[in-house]
Length: 318
Image (cartoon, rainbow, N blue to C red):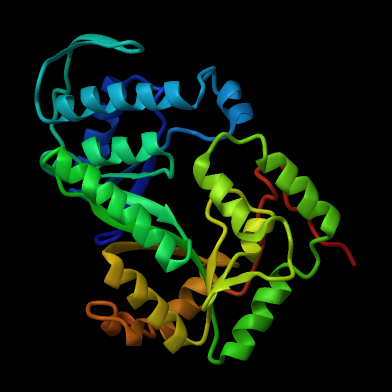
């Protein structure tokens, strides 16, 4: 944090693992240290095995109940209240934070989920609702549902999307890079990954898996929207693939639906970030257009990504 001035930090919190009061104090501290650059990503958890390893033995609906109670306490504490709360899962007395955050009323809350419980929670308590990359029509339906629920609560919610990007100077090069990314993944590995994901009780993960159904023969599910990453990666499994103009057009397509926050990544992370900045930034509105062409790409390793949240990358041997 002390080495950056504009970079904003999206930090995950996991209701059910940490006390809402302790989490609120930590958020206030980080927000003060960064001079108001903290963003909070609320994660309810969708992998039962991981949840049990973290000490959470709750089903899907119970986790959302905990998250709802957690945020009611967390938000009030960061607004300077001394909170007494007794819920089904959480209870606090005189909960408070002595030092307030810089951002008012508190660091913005980001949250993603595709179930009805998730949409209701977003409508009632969060600031930015995040979706994983789905075809624009499906994203539009989700946004409309959250908007309607928020309006019934007298609120408005902003929207964001989480995507990978594979951009090259030509579309042909981009699609070759996409194919190369998964060329060494065997059918057995894909089957093992999909079996692992099937244990999740996440509606979002179910929707990601349904986009490809574990098959690699039809991975472009919408213009320039590729689901190859989701064959072996949990969570965000879609990527924008194409030349700079195509990628910029797809971004605008999502922006026209109401998406304001775009959370991108690529493989390798740093190299794709530089490509995106150099090739796509000039085609985006300010301030991004003026940021294009800065920096030097790091071509050194190591590189790798976990498969199915379980299998670590191994060093290649000759």
